[in-house]
Length: 130
Image (cartoon, rainbow, N blue to C red; front, side, top):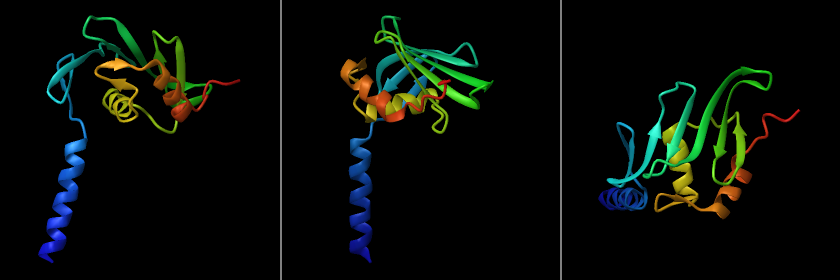
């Protein structure tokens, strides 16, 4: 019994060591206690994610009651000039940043252009198609 508990503790500690901690301090995003991004969420229906220089890199919009669905997200990667939509997986600002980091699309607080395309392929549901 003690051996099983010890193994379980080691596994949990191992996962904790590989995960990155994301915190919000006012309009600053801290990743592992390091300032990484800025957030502008002054509008309740949209969130702008900016680099530390203030350049918008991602725009997240919550769309309610459109002809495409009751609620979905539209995410725009500004510099790459591409968008994606998701209805079954509603991204919050924290969840979006977590997914970008987990998929290695956001590395050292910068978007990897090649990984942005892969991220869109994984999560885009083409909600706004006619």
